[in-house]
Image (cartoon, rainbow, N blue to C red; front, top):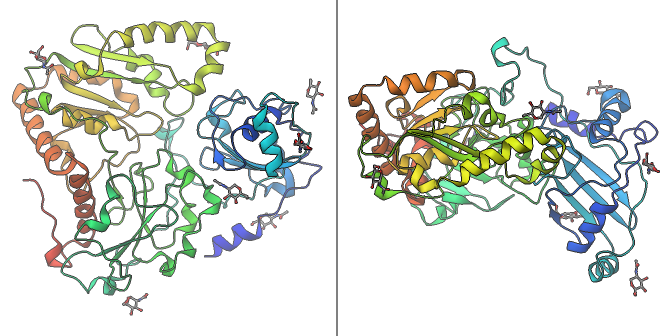
Length: 502
Ligand SMILES: *[C@@H]1O[C@H](CO)[C@@H](O)[C@H](O)[C@H]1NC(C)=O
Ligand SMILES: *[C@@H]1O[C@H](CO)[C@@H](O)[C@H](O)[C@H]1NC(C)=O
Ligand SMILES: *[C@@H]1O[C@H](CO)[C@@H](O)[C@H](O)[C@H]1NC(C)=O
Ligand SMILES: *[C@@H]1O[C@H](CO)[C@@H](O)[C@H](O)[C@H]1NC(C)=O
Ligand SMILES: *[C@@H]1O[C@H](CO)[C@@H](O)[C@H](O)[C@H]1NC(C)=O
Ligand SMILES: *[C@@H]1O[C@H](CO)[C@@H](O)[C@H](O)[C@H]1NC(C)=O
Ligand SMILES: *[C@@H]1O[C@H](CO)[C@@H](O)[C@H](O)[C@H]1NC(C)=O
């Protein structure tokens, strides 16, 4: 609570003179006007034309203003939210500068301009009409909540996703009201439509036996926080009608960088989190729940094949990233596992945010082209016909590939740091998957080549049971998520015991 107050009082704008970094946003504004009257949307790859100071400089100017209370994005978790005047419009830009060192808007960046409607109409009739641009000082964003500095562990230095714990230290006995759960033989859940509707495999939760539309009957309150149209500073969980400091609330997100988008950890109160990206350093065992990204495709025909009736031993085909989080897939250790025979590891750099960096670095571009030629010569479905499947972290540890490998009867090999595996209270993952930290990729091949056939078979059998029970469709995924919530109660409500796999 105190922290929230702090945050409010420090929403001071930074002093204009300090912050006087000129910005011309003609191209952005032109593009925006031409698209819509106003609204939040992204313009991947669009240059922020004429930004004379780099975004980093803007950030640092803001950071130094007011004795350092303006907020610059020290990291990706605090994107720069800038209000920029571009007469006759006012634009709110939300930028993740560290995603792109080249000053172009990426898919994750958002711009929301409000303009008089006649301007929009004019611009839309002729998108190449004279530049609407201006030199205005940006207003600095409100200060980010202050964080307790925590010493970085030596082994985490320089690695992605290692962030200090920040959620309040909650447990079921300190942050939960059991009395609210006395009204049903089932775990009853109320789901808000705010700030977002139930999505993904929760979309039909209102048709399940766990749902109640009566908040007085509910034991848990689900809050869906994936709101692409809103900035995180606009999401205020405390405004929810039954919030009570977050008691018995579960904040749910599928967002792949959810700490960038979900409500500030400082504002979640007693609420727990249920997320596809759950970091061990944030996770509160027995309180939070890690859920999977749902498979985009299922491979039932392949699932019938035994582990040694398959075309490949180990495969991966997917996107790699060229900077910041996600460069693991670009590493020589990772790509070097490819042998063109029983181990296929092929990557593509085709991503809108890579245009600039590829243009500037011919060596890199050449390397990407070579990789892409190889990538194009393998079909994804064909590569799923493999004993082991690699599920390396991309921009974040969770990947769709994990569940897809399970659906194909493959044994997943996770390459991740700081990741809580999905449904970890329901599934004994050590009986199915293998997992290597990003620093230990070099061990993978010798480990799988020396694994006893019986062990591979045992792993495959358990993996398939896990898949069929908990992953095989949206209904199974919803049931598993509720079952994972039930494990938080550890039998305190006997009729809620979730079924487990032997
Ligand atoms: C854009 O800004 C306007 C004005 O501040 C606001 O009413 C609107 O909700 C915003 N839209 C989105 C999608 O953020
Ligand atoms: C930005 O820099 C260019 C070249 O240095 C200069 O010509 C232009 O006037 C500058 N624009 C502003 C708004 O400062
Ligand atoms: C900056 O924030 C700190 C802590 O919130 C506060 O003590 C300090 O007075 C603030 N400084 C200014 C210049 O506002
Ligand atoms: C929009 O176009 C109309 C007619 O062409 C013109 O009268 C008006 O001034 C224009 N508005 C702006 C803001 O340019
Ligand atoms: C817990 O829930 C019960 C029943 O809804 C209520 O009477 C009680 O005041 C709650 N306790 C707290 C600490 O919120
Ligand atoms: C998988 O690979 C095996 C071995 O090469 C082959 O016999 C089988 O037809 C393949 N199955 C599918 C569905 O592609
Ligand atoms: C260009 O890319 C190559 C290959 O990734 C890299 O080794 C080199 O350091 C890059 N050069 C520059 C100037 O960034």
